[in-house]
Amino acid sequence: MDNFVEEISTKLDPGAIVRDPELIAAFTTDWTRRVSGKCDLLVRPRDHQGVLDVVQAAINHHIKLQIQGGNTSLSGGSVPLEGEVLLSLGRLCARCAVDPDTLVATVDAGVTLERLQREAMKYNLTLGVDLASRGTATLGGMAATNAGGLHVLRYGSMRSSVISLRCVWGDGTESPRSAPLIKDNSGISLTPLIVGSEGTLGVITELTLRLVPVLNSKAVAMVPFVTIADAVAFAGKVRRMTEAVSAIEMISRRAIRIVEEVKGVVFPIRETFEVAVLLEISSNAGAGDELMEILQGTLLAPQLQSTLLGIDNTSWSGLWQWRESITESIQRVGEPLKLDLSVPVSALGDLWRAVDEVQSDLAGGLDVIRFGHLGDGNIHVNLLAEEEVLDLAEVEIYRRVAELDGSITAEHGIGTLKKEFLSLVRTEWELARMRDLIAIFNPGRTLNPNVLI
Ligand code: 2HG
Ligand code: ZN
Image (cartoon, rainbow, N blue to C red):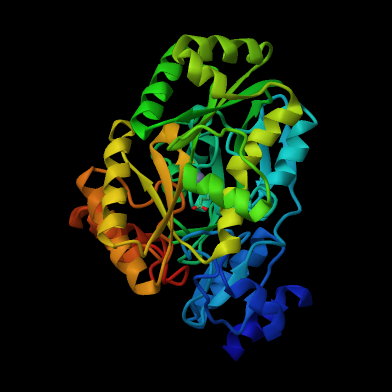
């Protein structure tokens, strides 16, 4: 370790090398507080060359590195578990350049989503991907994990927004600068492969991202449904009617109760419901009118009466607050086990029932809080219980998800927490090919040795 530090100290600025345990502590526990690692050294290069120097020195001295962006991973993917040196990209943030003619941004990996949103907004542009953790999540981390978020239905996950990337690979080589080429068919592209590889192939240092125009007319409705099946049918009808849908989110009754309890607020819908659907319509003009037309064409009169509308900015963001406060509110009542499930949208009712069955089999010992991205078939199931009950519930729910041809992680990634379950949803052949790729790009597993596989 001393030789490693000696080598990088000649190349990085003094502020880049941190050995103070108190300063390091802030980086070693993940956002959920469920995963706490250990680490004696934090390295924070400011640029691509610094990252290259660190990775090459790590290879020379047989040091393992754990990469970290904003440390917002919900699957333990960003903390060092076994004393790896923490390679934080938070200071790699000098560049955040928007090209308004090409509609792209070129950013350093440590730039936060919120900062890009601010810069892009100067030209009425934004990134299609948006997340509640926008103030902290970094674009490099979002690409490495193929983050999804609130508008996947319209803009896709990060993979759809990444045009090109620059990387330092785990074998100590580097790729050229990212280029804003909207079209480029010169052979096999590594870009889609790196996105979602969770830092097991290389460190992303720079990204060129596709931007989209900000749609200034937005309207939101919160519609209560007695069953999840009714909500799914509604989502399908709405999507068949218009392309202007920018989100179809779901909040269960239990999730609403938690937000009410923690925030001291009262949900305005008093009728009994199993799920509330948050539907957002965005366009350049008249989103409110279009939303009303959609609701009138899909809901019966009593349902329409209990629907909440957010047509102006204040009521619009007030309704979104219910959805965006859930994660933070749950965190205030416990340390949940977070499941991030997806199934074909048409199987969401089956998934709901499966989770209900697991809960009743565990005889009341399990608190289940469901919410998520109904339009994408991606349901977050947060579980609160004693650890042994959580273990049983997790295995059983994943087994049921696999039976429904679903995924054990739709958007948060495998990280370190879901590694043992990967084989439920990937074949031996697929796992072997993942290992082959890691062996090519990151041969000594210098980067993220405990993540993914
Ligand atoms: C969301 O959709 C995030 O709000 C967080 O993916 C999900 O807290 C969670 O489980
Ligand atoms: Zn989500």
